[in-house]
Image (cartoon, rainbow, N blue to C red; front, side):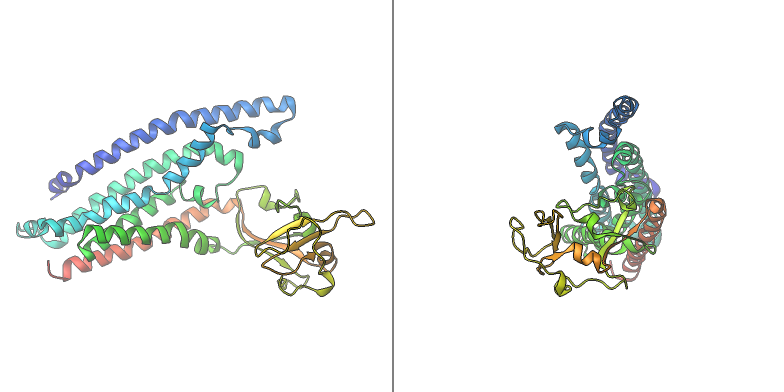
Length: 360
């Protein structure tokens, strides 16, 4: 049975190995180039007092910038590709070609047949995904050091141990749907939609931020009143590490969220020239100096009126940011890996039920 499994799947293992070799041929030289360039910049910036500018100046060329952005985005889809082209056809093709019936008439039980196939494919998935993830993690060390953004969903999904778990789940889901529908094209479409929804949308945006109780940080509204909207307070921990922002809310001294549609009436102001009206989304601006020469910071959110941040600040309102600090990165990697491995048990169990209990 093992010999048969090898004969059936050796081509896909060889193709995956070829792609892994091509991936390594791109990642190793570019990774070494980025790291040595970064180390050289660190060694020389001290003499010119430009170390604070390194992150904004390195790798801004078209070639380097394209590779640094395109490679992580492309890697996002490797678990999905494995689920589609390793998972779905595993049983769907057997049902379509009728080869499963041939095996079952050769004194091989359904359970043994399915178990051997699952072991081969899932073990191959772990090896291939692990090799890709290890290369990607090593290659990303320069970007991690410069931008401190490992918690960004693209980089979190492509580094560490979590991509291996994504791949195992993707392949398991593809196998189950292939066994259920027994038609490759139908199972491919449904698997693609579910994997994109779960791996790229639901978990990163709605589940991951809440693995642990977030840390809260408050800062003055006036430190966040520039048009760019980025906090300017140097003590803000969310600007000094690879943090995961959970929420940002304007709260009163009693920790009550501000209703931007109905703010305190005494803080409502007339939009200054150049403010651009009251947009439907979030907008920030700093008005022209008033008669006493003091700039007036204003804000408008969700279609509400323009509001003086100076006034809100005098009433005790602050900007509260809830975030997951950078030191929890590997804890989150382990939690998400465990989550996906547990989720993978469900389609595997469903596959056994489908194969062992229903007619061929």
